[in-house]
Length: 315
Image (cartoon, rainbow, N blue to C red; front, side):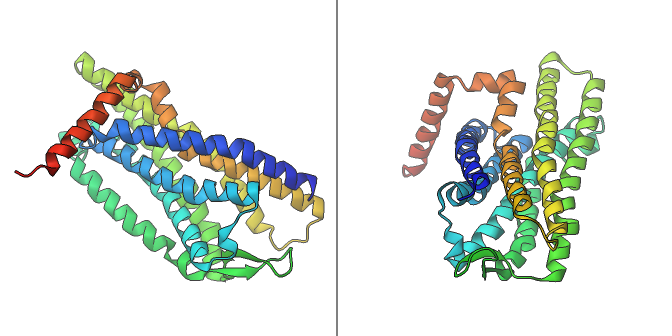
């Protein structure tokens, strides 16, 4: 095994596992803390985002750690898992980013001076938006279920890799549109535009102190996510575009090793976007930090358990 492969394996194990653990624990805490506020439209969207983050970390990062770090890749031997992993990982990535964008739009609408626009910041609108998003992204991922297959490995004989069956139309769509627009330009633009509008609207509001403080905290929670998402996704998108555009070039062994190592690094960095949400909330919102008090968490668990018990009792 080459030194670059050993380095990629070490990076995946010693960086990937902490990202996976922190992301799983953070998203689980988000679910606990946001569950009681799920009737608030923004909290509901954050709650959905945490759920899709868990799917993204499982189908994407966890399976990558098993493959690169420990040499276990079920998608190379099981066609059904190959199709499911490719389709569900892409759908979960896009659904998570969609939830964050919808939450940012919701905060922008809630901070508007126009009562007509503020009416769109409600739970029913958030639920409909999530339902439409799920349908859209599942349909978007359907071609992966159809065209994903076990193909002969170009580097090793008698082995297979899980990849999309060569299709020029689908390949061009993914390279020149889907990756750039859906994963890069569109969510980044929405977050920046709505973040700026929310900050401007909030600064102009003349509300009571408590409501102004809540609006400020929500604005901070949204705005801090923008650079984190940019730092996480832009290198991945840029390098993925580079590899796709140079895939037909003849490359030396050293160049391939360097590109594989770089791919591993930017891919791990990409998963930070699905790990950091809890930590962004924690550092940007004093109210969120207070909710992490162990006694508060225990009370919430007890309340949920008590409500569940009462629901099971006959009327």
